[in-house]
Image 1: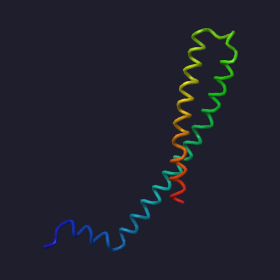
Image 2: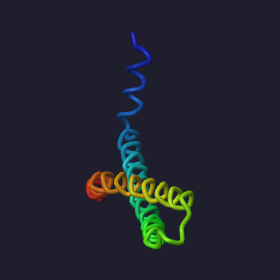
Image 3: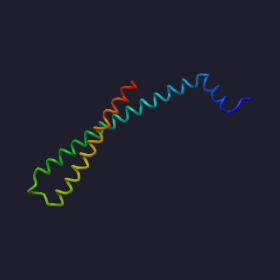
Image 4: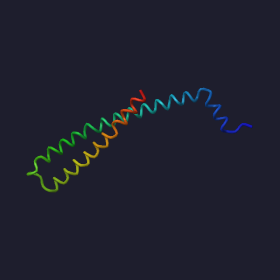
Length: 100
């Protein structure tokens, strides 16, 4: 008696398994490239935002308390985002290297 599971294994063993594996690897490689590009695309403007907020904060005499608070929030959120990107970077590099 042949059950459904045996049929699926037979179907996949006729070359489909290799094709599916190759397709899955291509998808994984593309995802890794997109994640690496996203990390770079986020880091560049984020550094500009952080630098600009630091520049504005260096002129405290002309800022109101509300402006200072807003700039501090921007700086803190940007710094937190940069930490996350820095923590993710080794993982992204490892995945990208493993898929090459």
